[in-house]
Each structure stands twice: as structure tokens, then as C-alpha cells.
Length: 117
Image 1 (cartoon, rainbow, N blue to C red):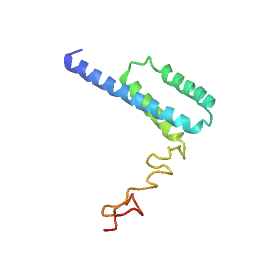
Image 2: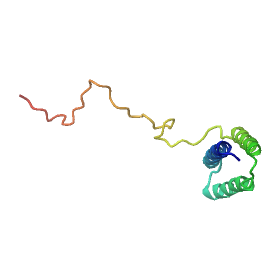
Image 3: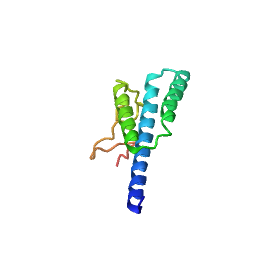
């Protein structure tokens, strides 16, 4: 391989590793939405890891791209319709429940103890 093709190969391989890592993390986090209890989650997470580890030996770049596309399609098909969102995170039930007052409104902390000058 020439220097340019080697660097192109390594760049594509690094991009594939990143896409696999992102897909795995998304699928693992989504597994928490489907598993009600931790002991169920641990088994599902182990099964998911085995699916990813089974194809770890692949070297052909086009085959890896096809496997990533198939994995992404499977992930999108089985995504939870109502994922758990931490209440204070964006999209959660408590997010901006007590918003910051608009500018121009003064908050008086010593109510009832004002100076009567």
C-alpha cells in the first residue's frame, strides 16, 4: 500500500470504529429503557455485547459498513417509543419547572424587614 492509501484506510477504519462505538452506546442506553430491573438489564447488556463481539474480527471495510448500517437499522426499529428521561434533564417532567424570573423583576429576600426611611 502506498502512503496515501494507507492513511485513507486508517481514516476510514477510525471512522468505522467511532460509528460502532456510538451505535453500541446508544443501543446499551436504550436497553435500560426496555429492562425494568437491573438484573434484566445485565443479561440484555451481556447479549448485546456478544452481538458486537461476534463481528469484531471482520477486516473488509465494505462488509463492516454493511454491518454498521444493518445494526443502525435494527436499533432504529427496536428503539423504545417512550424512553426514560431524567426529570431535570431537557425533556424531563421537572425541566424548567421553576424558571429564572425575567429581567426587571426584583426578588426581595428580606420581605417585611425593609428600611422604613
